[in-house]
Length: 389
Picture 1 (cartoon, helix red, strand yellow):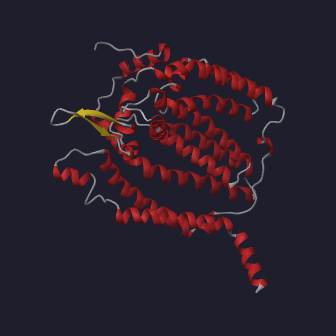
Picture 2 (spheres, one colour):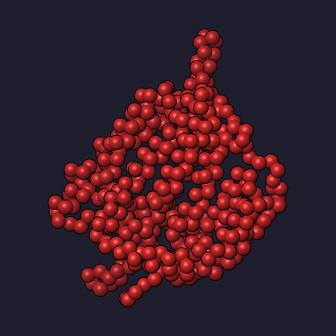
């Protein structure tokens, strides 16, 4: 009995990673299957039902319809991954690449003190702007994704129309809902209301913008740390101070939008990629995949940066490990986290992308000369060039 127990323990220790992967994939399959069987489907709910009755198609209808199709596709992908787990889940300790090791000749205390001073400076400069009144994109986000709005009912009385949690995830009729920011802002407002208990239902400017403010300040440190990780600690300090004093950075840090989150996630994603290339453990690759997912979830146009980053990752893996068993270990990990992130992003974001396509179809784009004028005006003085009303 003792020998059998020892063998079982040894087997479990050897296949622990395989067991965890299969357990997670099985859990994902169960959740997706429940979504397909118990949730709304494209034939009896969602877009088809609204069109058949002549009603306006709502954002939630896009989520019900396209969410079903993405779930069906993810079931196929997850099943394939589960059946082939033993092939792609290569075990063994990852090899460290000495050339990508963190630099040692860095005055860490001086570096972080100067970066912290830049962060504090940016925070002090931006703090007065947190209480400024909202502008149109912020108002749209508050009304339809974060909080709600007042309107008069049939009797002429004002009533509050609450923005539901599902709106934070899937309201994309106008493409200005940066979902992770909306979620964080809702949590920020909920926490403030629970503590302050205001007599009237209103949105406090500082609380609504708090997630962007914190992310914007964090982005300075993350940019500096990325450059330090590459061995450029002096340019890292300079970059932090340049951003701290830059007018556009000041604006993004103090506006209730997702751009500050994007600016924080870009250097974080690149730093995590360097760490994964240095020592490609599953944990480091998963952190890189999660950061990619959050970046693309916050700002879908970030796909261009991620395409370049993953092209660099592919070339780096080939250059660093070609002709060795390590390449066989690292490539599945890199591809696996990208596939997992794509599956999660598609499940949550495809309904929003279909609303974006409808928005682009209806809205008339600027002609090339006017687009160029607006672009140059924004880059030069921070304002669009507008002719006429």
